[in-house]
Image (cartoon, rainbow, N blue to C red; front, side, top):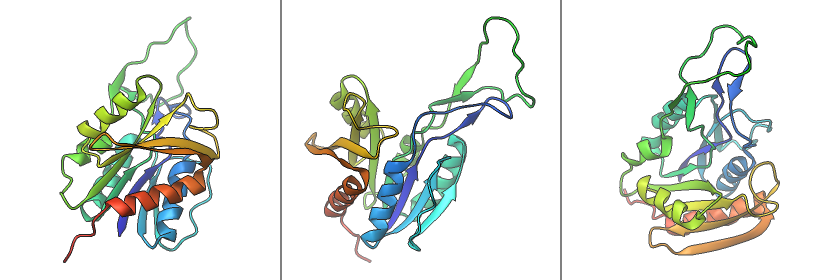
Length: 217
């Protein structure tokens, strides 16, 4: 099994010293990469900027990127040959329309930024997904969690979507633990209670392996 896995945040530069980003640490994505490798898969880990040690397994090839566009380009190169796609990265939805070549100086009481939409990596690649490929997305929601996650699954051609909720203590960004619900195309929900991200990753990998049918040559 060859797994394409995205992890961490993306940083969208404003100028040489500032960027738009988010609070993702990449811990869940890196735990998934390790769990897949432990289960015998070869993993291409496309990682945004994180403060994590590189995975030690020889089964994991890490590609480091910074922006959403760079992550998309790296993923698009790998996706056609990968059996399983896991989109665990927290990709910025928007980027500054203009990246200033010099540091923006403080002037006036307000600063207005024009933002333009980034490529939706999972949705764009989802349009090219073949029937024998298996795609898993992550959703972080704060309201109407199940409905929004199911809508994302359908729009982006996922086979499973892993739902995080910021309502749950000890889950989400920055924690070593996580609590998720997994939805499939039939709308069935499987709940994983709060546990270490390393343990959760093993459980998710087992679930993915049980749902993925290895194509015959």
